[in-house]
Length: 368
Image (cartoon, rainbow, N blue to C red; front, top):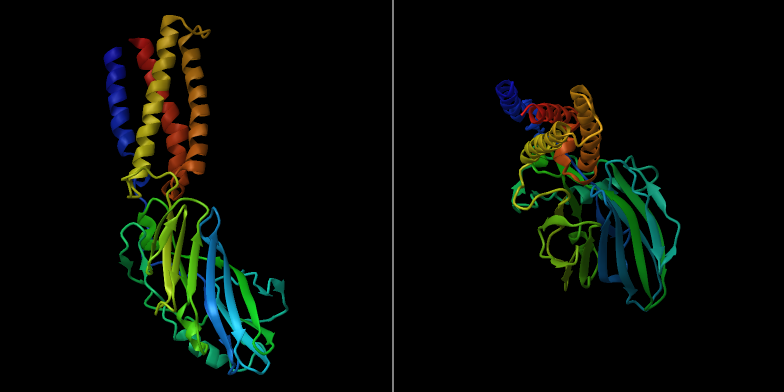
């Protein structure tokens, strides 16, 4: 009897370690790149004596790294002895148009006009689009290796989904104002980097376009993730807690791109996505062996109120299902994104494989 159970258990371990192949592999779509939003192009609608004295860019990411609240803060001054009623354009390229913009002058919200990419009534939109197209897309960076990830799409029309915010700021002679533009930002992602345990998101911001003004002061960029992340950028940053900060005396010479990946659920040193489904298989088997073995051993010793072997097996399966449900919830809440890529397989391991292994282990322990 014991030999039969042991043989069955050996076969079980072998087949569950290998079954199914999809449990250990997720086939990404490397040709897929979803472009994210871009912003930072502030233009004067006409020649002006106003200069930009400093720029602060703050990116506040939420728990979902795909979305961020962006704030551009421009300290501006009119150096002329004449008043300047300056009309300004701020350009945002958005995938979904869910940017929810807000413009403030000296921390007071002001009205503005919003024109979609079809132009509406905005004059000289063709010139604006030409300027926008001149801002080349930046390469996507892998946050684990800092290597560039080639664009599988071969380029896009970068003026698509362009939103233009038109507003006016009056400057008295020698007056200074703080102009703040806030909006929501949806990051991009790339199918090639599905090979990482968690999804990689990349952000792009236009810094060089500030050179369209007659002069420009220092630039400060602050990135504030709401959680610990892997982070890489094409400009030098210093880490401050969970955040990152960079300061430049003037324009850095090119635009900013950075990539982030959450460390949620990751084990140090294990950066491949296919390792985590294997670890879940092993964990489910080990929990099933310990749980079932313990229940079978207790029934054999008479340390349980269950008086029959079938009752012992039924209790084992019920307890294993409870533990499996808890494990499945824990995987969703605290595990890497690789588990979510095939939720059916993850559920199979927690709710079928674990109880089945515990059932076999309980029978073996009771039969010894």
